[in-house]
Image (cartoon, rainbow, N blue to C red):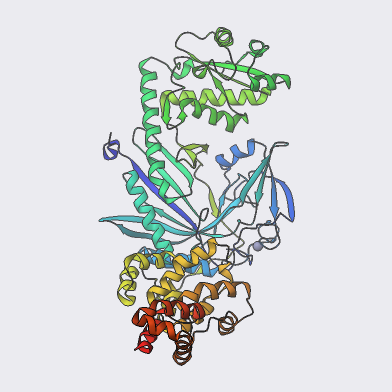
Length: 631
Ligand SMILES: [Zn+2]
């Protein structure tokens, strides 16, 4: 069944974040690279919410603090310095990054600001050593055209990326973060919430993604682009979904979120119709440890053996609703469990809608129901852990169950790889930004802006048409060149080498990929060397079939020049005179046979000659000379 999103009143706003391919990070001289080595330095910190300079404690910050988490940061000297460790003030803003964001902003018809003011945004999940992320608006009020629609761009900003989570330590509530990613420049592009369907959300995201790529200054590959979506429907809520890693996933994420909210609305209506009221849900938690003394449920057994307890709460009127699917593989029970995990630090919850199961017997369920006084229409949720966690978890369950009656909760969710989402935290309060006093504002002069404006990159579709026309490429090859990182190199080789544009483009796209697959370190051969190879092809000194050979040899012998390589490999093409002499010799060596076979000897002779000159002569030319000689 087709969902009518216009009727539902769906509104989506996008925030696209992409790493910029700059020389250095945003506020220090470290390279914007992720470390592959084991960490050389680690340090432990406990984050506390700071009274922000405007005098308000951020509620989201306070919640994270309550969890009592410690952070172990990991670092390598090659990819981080004292700035990332928050032991040294930030260096001045990286103007190369500012230029890239300005370029993008101008391509999106936005108006640059006169002065760039760096702001601090409270972040207290530990992903930033300082407890805040630095961010600055570079341009505002732009628009792009997607199909026939004009989509307003609210702002284009520059941000520092956060540290990346590398794991959790079971002991002591410790999260590990690698700070190599911290400080990598990110562009943030935000649209107005004027997107009205999942498909449109994806189209707009792809259009923005294309513009970013057209700048030629963004990083590529998984993990370099992250989208946040603001999804709202009038009967539901405004939900912020963070961290969608692939543009192709966006339409499904939106689709599932609408499904989730609509199903929550339906559940709320059913509960109201049944007369279930928020007041009837109480924080009356009954100790049910005794019920499970003889249990075969491994999880509960392990908890009780460790001296932990089991407590249960009754959810009046909820029977059957906890197993109701909200989106694929995600039920109302999953929502309750997510909240319990976040607020109660527990591994999960059990509820009667999924019982008997997991080793819990029908008898135990019956005893459990009796213990909490649950009737026919009620559901029971129970948790086994230490007392403090059990109580916090059940409180969170009751809170979420109350919301199930009254409304779809506005919250921040995180995207999963299968396009579903999970609870992340409550929506942050308003006062999240305050000025960064360690960095002076940077002026954006008119001259600077006009210089960038006069030199904007060519949009991909325009470039495609031009490449096809200028170099007589077919559409497939032209597209491959644009999608590769070799657009500029291709044009410079095609203009200067005299080799055919098709040969050059096939090599830069398909052959290079194949060589890489075969383990050739393609990055060791630089553009100028590739150009030299093609110059030899253009002048007839190297057969095009020999290009991959020369290339792989160069990748392993970096000190060698291209002409040396060609000679060393014995790949230098024979001159016409050398070839003629060779053909004459082969003919005279096989004189009798040639006389006997006449013109039919050509196949045999071709084979003999090619055996001697393979890779050193063009087969077309050999055939031509043979025919001439035979006459
Ligand atoms: Zn650094």
